Amino acid sequence: MTALIQRCARAVLVVVAVAWLAATSMLTARADDPVATSFTFDGVLGSDGRLSVTETLTFETTPDELVQRIATKQRIDASSYYTYEVRDVTATVGGVDALTGTTTDGDYVVVNADTSSAAGEDVVITYTVEGATEDEESSSGALTVLSWRVLQGLSVGVDQVSGSFRLPAMAQVVDCTAGPPGTPDKCDLYTAGTSESPMPTFQTGPRGMGEQVTMTVGVAADAVRPTANVVTEWSLDRAFAVTPLTVGVALGTLLLGTALIWQRHRRTGRDAAASGMAGQPVGTFRPVGEGESVFETRDGLRPGLVGTVADERVDPVDVTATLLGLAVRGHLRITELPRTEHGLLDWSLTRTERQADDLHDYERILLDAIAPAGQSTLVSQLPVTLAPVVESVQDSLYDEVVQRGWFDVRPDDTRNQWRTRALVATGIAAALAIGLVALTTLGLLALVLLLLAGALLWVSDRMPRRTAEGAQLVEGLGALSSLLAHHPTREMPRGREIEEISRVLPWAVVLGNKDRWLQALVRADADDTPDPHAVDWYHAPDTWHLRDLPASLTQFINTVQGLLFAR
Image (cartoon, rainbow, N blue to C red; front, side):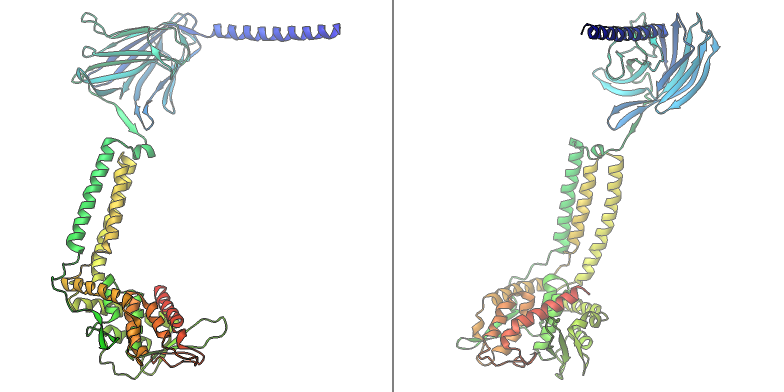
């Protein structure tokens, strides 16, 4: 046990001895590091903003080499910094050139001097700086301020740092900080000078290797030219800075742009006021007996035509309603084809021999395309069948709503014109937005410009303008839609229910409430006998009943519209 204790004690003594030797070696090495006994700074600031620097270092023990790293960049904040141009660098020992090289290392100019032969001689480093002066406002007026690290980047420590500035005018502001980078403190002594000795001076020390001393002086703005070069880095926070200025500009632009778009739509895209007197009704149910009425519409009106006026465009529902209208009026027969189990439902469209005297141009184009005389077309083939003529059908419809005085200009032309303007505005807004985000702090304004361009693009589809007659027609369509939703479906003349309700269906497809009128047809099926030909314009397989019409016709409408949408 005693032997174990002795071995542990010897081990502890060895560890202590090693630690003491290491600490002694470090202290000796630190004590042997060369230190300049003094560092004297002499700065001359010219009226052109250029700073000429002379640094004089005195050593008791001179290092073989002296290195100084002079910063060419000083950060202002997270997104900007100053850049300096350091030129005309020299290094001498006892008046003899000792400069071995000047290199650039990132944001520093690195000065290397051979001082191995500098025993008892001062080391003098000189250089000039441009970009160290900037203009500022103070309580005493406009100033030009110089801020420079008079001590920086030395490879040796300094016991005493002192220096002065020679300025073209009396200093009005003076400050001095010293310490390690990032943790500066005030210098021991600094003065702005007096009338007898106007040079600002400073003094501090000792300062370790790499520590900094920064001197700031300010003179009247007209005495020295500002030369600061500020570089601004891009960042998301900077681009979308939220300040009173950026928010005010963005909000003002948003309000002004919104007002202009609203005013333009109100002046150009708003319908003309309908005349004070109500026009002829679009459609009505005319009494023909006690508790009986028939559906009638104004001469020449068609579901597809008024559907174009209602939403200012030709869409699949207008074409579908036109097909139904042609069938109901006897120009076309829709035949539901038998199908195998799980097979797709399809229909044939066959032209009848009825005279086409009452056809509008767009109806004639449509009918000739899908059912030429003596031929038929499958609904599943409509996309191919209609492809060559669909533009002609649309053109004819748009031309007719203008000819009838419901629009002054074709709605599609108006939309195209405004959409082109909106796309141009969007391109300009996008280019401006990229520039604003990349180069300024007005990112919020960029978002507003894009938002306004999007709003103009949205409004462009709402710029077609109905005339007073067109607006009056739309009012009448609203009244007819309400009538279709509430008129009793049981008032059709007995024995003619199928014929009269059929006349309503194309209008109900465009204006809504078709399901209640289809259900009215179901009530006309009074027995369980199949009714494949009960509806003159809709034929079906032999096992089909009239009560199947709502499902069949709903599938027909959905299929036709789906095929037209997918075209």
